Image 1: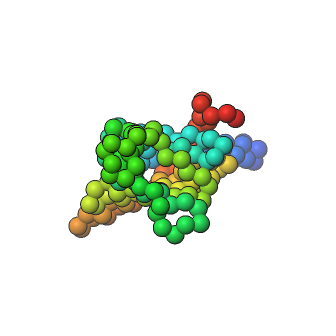
Image 2: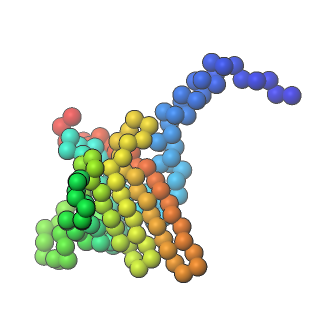
Image 3: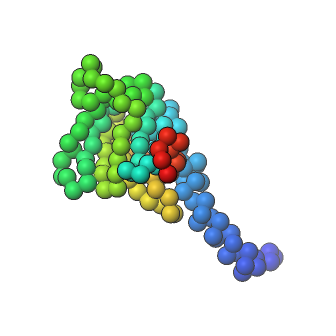
Length: 158
C-alpha cells in the first residue's frame, strides 16, 4: 500500500505545476502544421505596445486583423516565406510580424478547410496568444488550441 505524500510536498508540487503549466502546455501541444506552433506561428515577442506575432516559413495564409473595440477586420495581409505583405499587393513592403495589443484579434485562412483565430491572452501570469486551429473536412473536424507565451523581445526596450 503506497504511503500518502507529505502535505508540504503536495503543495510544492501543485505550485510547480501551476508555474510550469504555460510552458508545458506549449511544449506538449501537437502543432497542426510543420511549424513550431499551431497556426504557422514561429514565435511571439512581448513589446510595450503588446505582442509581435511572427510566422514560420511554411505559412501561406490570408491574415485579417481586428483591433480592440472593432467588430470588423480592418487590416489584411498575405503570408509567404514567414513574411507578410499588406492585402494582395505583391509590390508592397514586407513586414516581419503582426503587432497585436490586448483586445486585438487575428483570423487566418490557411486553405478551404483550415482556419485559425489568434487572440492576445494571459495564462498563468504570462502574456502571449491563444491560437485556435480549426480543420473542417467532410466527415472529420478537429480543433486544436495552444497558448503560446510571449518571449521578451531583444530589440524592444524594457
